[in-house]
Each structure stands twice: as structure tokens, then as C-alpha cells.
Length: 234
Image (tube, rainbow, N blue to C red; front, side, top):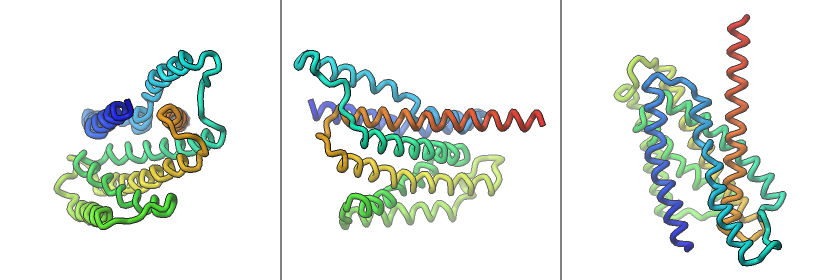
């Protein structure tokens, strides 16, 4: 069962990682300009996690009866997941902003540099040791991102100014940095949880993080809409 769940999650992650940026970029190519909406959609599907949570709950209730817990997350973990969720929402917006101004090939390669930031923050937060393989990967990805920055004219979207292109490039780098910080932060939350790390608890943490990320993007979208509407009236 554990291997089946791991394979299922890895499959979903692979599909989302490969298809998500292309769909988002297609939206902007076809004339879309709602960055907040695109960032909202990155975590807007969080309610689907309730399906496996309900399944596991009914299985526990079948075995344990009315004494079965409805949820396992403690208050400290909930607070940590809330803070991480807000950071994820910010990262979603920064990433969507970058994708709106960069080709998928460039944005994906630049975002891949998050491995370097993940390794650095993992070393600082959870004492993850460097290995020759990780150092080699970090060096290659970082150099690759630098080469892309020096050869931006070859893949610049038609009609886009240099200022917009470079802004998108650096926003994507910022998204990579923030992603590299968030992943070790999640790992540190798992270590500090002082609870048995089960599949159910991980799903609960994911629900909380994605919920608050979506709330962050919802508030940002409505705030921007209200500001633009007020500006037009003035």
C-alpha cells in the first residue's frame, strides 16, 4: 500500500510539473493577463485531498469505532502549515508573473535552479549534508541559469520589451529561491511535529498549506481588482 501511494503521488507530481507550466504559458500566449488567477489555480484544487482523507477516516472508524480521530494535526503543526501556505501563495504569484513573460523552456530551466537553493536551505534548516552529486547538480544548474540570462534575445516572446523580459526572468529566479526555502521548511515542520508522520498527517498538512495559499491568492486578486476599479473611477 505504501509503495502504491508513493507511486500514485509521484505520477500526479510528474504530470503536474510537466503539463502545468505549458498550460499556464498557453493561457498567456492566447491573450490572458490575469496573473493572480493563474497563481490561484496552482493550489485551487486542494479540496480533492479530502477524498483520500475521508477514505482513511472511514477505514479508521471501521476498525476503531466512534473513538476514531477525525484529524491528527496538532496546533503547532497547524500554525506552521498556515505560515508555509502563505509563503506558497506568494511563491505562486511570483512564479505566475515570471511564466507570463518567459517561454516555458526558459522559465522551467531557471526554476530548476531551485535545487541549489533547496540544498543550501536544507543544510541550514535540517542539517542535510552536501554530497559530490548534489554539488555537481547545483553547479550545473546555476551555470545553466546564468547562460540563459546572457542569451535572452533568442527566445524573447514577440512584442515583449527587454524590461518585461528581464523582470520575468528575475521574478522566476525569486520563485526558485522561495521554493528552495519552502521545501526544507516543510521538512523541518515534519521533524518538529513531535507526532507520528503518517500519510494521513501529511495530507492534512497539504490541505492546510494549499488552503491558505489559495486564500492568499484570492485576497491578492480581489485587492488588485478593487484598486484598479478605484483607479478607473478616479
